[in-house]
Every structure is written in C-alpha cells, then in structure tokens.
Image (cartoon, rainbow, N blue to C red; front, side, top):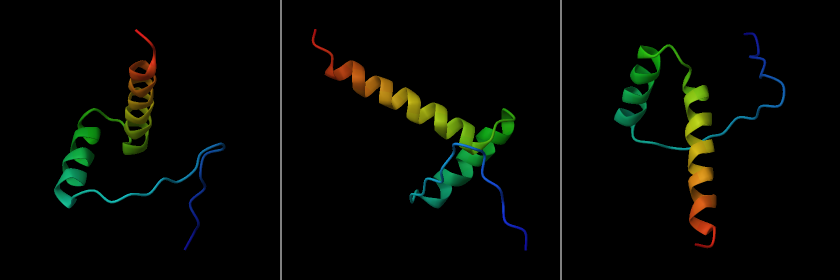
Length: 58
C-alpha cells in the first residue's frame, strides 16, 4: 500500500460529524467539482473572519 503524500504546508484535521451530514457534504462538493478539503478550508477561513469581526469594538 502506497502512502498518500500530503501537500506541502498542509496538516490533517480530524473530527466527527453525523454520517448523513458527511454524505451530503461530499455530494455537494462533487457537484461543484471541488474537494471536501478545499471547501472545509474556505469554511474555516470564513468562520474565523466572522469571529474576528464579532470581537472588533463597535
């Protein structure tokens, strides 16, 4: 069995989600021809930006 090479500068992130949610996510990513990893990266970046904006003084 060959080891999968990870892209430079990338790390693996693990967590548990409901099985049906994972299935729907995979189908949705496939429908737009994007990897789950790419979409997860975008979602995490957006979430972090939202958290920063919530902390900014008004």
